[in-house]
Amino acid sequence: MKRLVSRVLDDWLSDTRRKPLVLRGARQVGKTWLIRDLAARSGLDLAELNFERDPGLKKHFLANDPKKIIAELSLVLGKEISPARSILFLDEIQSAGEVLKTLRWFEEEMPSLPVAAAGSLLEFTLSDFPYSVPVGRISFLHIEPMGFREYLAAHGQDGLLSALSSWRPGQELSPAAHEKAAEWFDRYGMVGGMPAVVAEDVAGRKPGGCREMQKDLLAALRIDFAKYRSRMDRDILDVVLKAVAQSIGAKFVYARVAEGVKQHQAKKALELLAAARVCHLVGYTGANGLPLGSESRDRFRKAILGDVGLLHALLGTPAAEAFPSRRDISPSLLGRVAEQIAGQELRLMSGSVGDGPDLFYWQREGGRPGEIDYVAQIHGKIVPVELKAGAAGSMKSLHQFMFEKGLDFAVRIDLNPPSLARVTVKTTMGKPVSFRLMSLPAYLLWRLPEIF
Image (cartoon, rainbow, N blue to C red):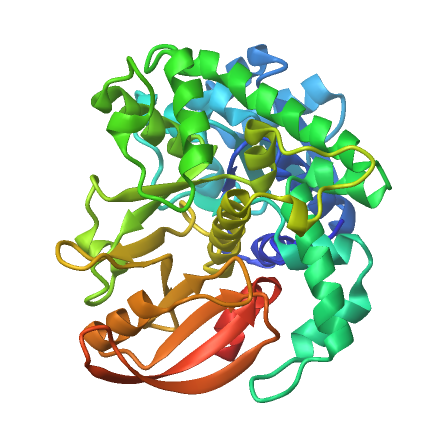
């Protein structure tokens, strides 16, 4: 399978000023595969260490001399590690936090050797690390699940991808392309973007088998809860995870998580799950200027899961010989799936460097209720993104938001073919407002930065 982030890895490998690279992200998003694929495509020998499988490997990094470290590792692996012909890959580095500090010596004294590391729950390791992380001497790359266009590419839908990629505002998208893209997007909404599940779907595994794989991935994440033991009771983490699945699209209310779970426990558990990338927080923004997070408030939060497949595993969405059709799914679940996938696509749209992009939403405080599902920053502009699970729906909140913020461009995600029009209406308060409205089917959300 092709991953878009592979281009970033190619650029890193060819950069003469590259630093050791640490891949961050949840379990099973493909971090290890990406480095193995990079080595194979580049014709380089992969010197791979796994600290979770063999914790004793840590002792070879006690010296601050990269040449000595490489000499010992060459003996351990039984092959020469050459800066010109190898990539050193330190997998599951969260199990060897002390190794992180040695990466600075590779950047300073052996920059010709590509060094990559990967780990899940890495944020916990970094927070517990007794030494200073070599800031400025290492780079971070955040890895997300596969997006819709990667899903199409994995299924060999090159013609459809070409049609979607070539569409421009003002043009009519072929009805055949619209219908086909909508069908594939509905399937993506059931399969999700976890690479192992996508691979099975591509191989022709029945939907029921894909759903079982999603449940297995969820079980693996729950096993990791034991590693949070010093921070939070695993039962509370599980309850909060289920609460996230139930509340997608709505404000996450700590007091309503479950009987017996205190608000401060729910808040801490949610933040731990977000640190592990099992879920992502959607923060409040006043949308009065950039950056969007400058007005964030902890008591106004929504949350989504790391992947829509986890949503189905948690809620028990049925699947056997076929996935359920849209007409057989409850409107509540359709709304949550729409909000979940939009969040995933927005995170991919914003890039993958550093800690990963933030998500924001807006809601009015006091007076008439009003909410914008997502507020994005695109090319230095504030762009509201309103979601509609069907083909129609009221936009009263969007009209008021555009009036209050004085913005000229908004996005509506629905089931209709794409279009761009100027909307001139009055708000519920009778105030005139005019703005450009881009109506996009959800399968085209990844195109937004190009067509804005």
